[in-house]
Length: 306
Image 1 (cartoon, rainbow, N blue to C red):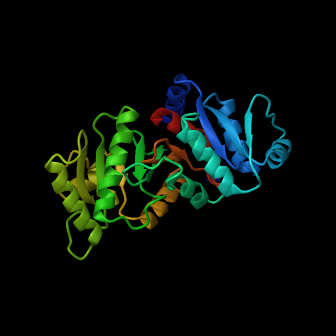
Image 2: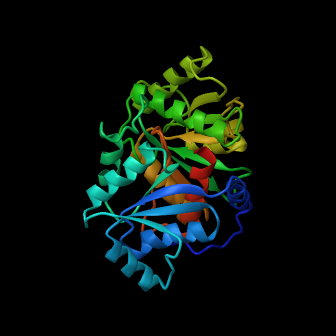
Image 3: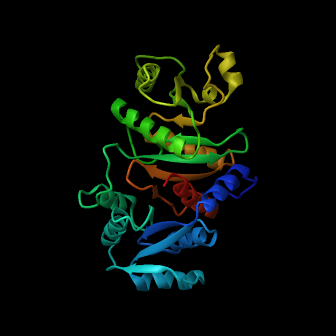
């Protein structure tokens, strides 16, 4: 996210401060063999958010540190062959053994890390399907806003969406959002049998009314406008405690979520953090396009939900 910061981010500041108050989180950083990935881990360390353990070929890691003009003094390096899959497996093994409280992606492909996470040997997989959450500080919105799932689940089924909701509700409770308001997005604000996402949203709301989801307020389907704007909802005569005041927006598919996430960053001036939920430890994914602030914030978010 190479957006140039134009705004202050007080909610993000507060979230990071809360994370630092919990102490440094031990994080296994798998294959940090690029300046981007190593720099992200070191920046989070310098901010007092994490205590990184670097896993991978020592020579490559040290070369990256030299390029960054950064010191690795006091940082544990677990050496492996120059193989991102082996490094990912070793990082997962450290998490499985309880030596770290989170995993962080380095410069390998995402599927190389997640493949190690879901492997039987890794022992990090749980009964729930994994999903991802973005946590936003948006200048034009009155509180933090979460978005799920824009990274992991490509075209989730109704059952998958149940799990995504369970993941995000549990996450919200961990970060002290006691009764999160969740808006289920579609292209329309009513159930249309020809629009599958609206049908799924209608079914999920029915289940919510039967107390299938504890300690959350769930409503939809909503178009994005009437989910996020009370005025838009009123124009369409929508009466809902969620409309105009959601804590979480649930998207119907990865492509919708990906486009919305990037729009909130590049057009709305937002800054965000993101983690994968549903494994035994949170998983921090960073991208070369992430801002330095987003990388540190993602580590802070992992600390709060670890």
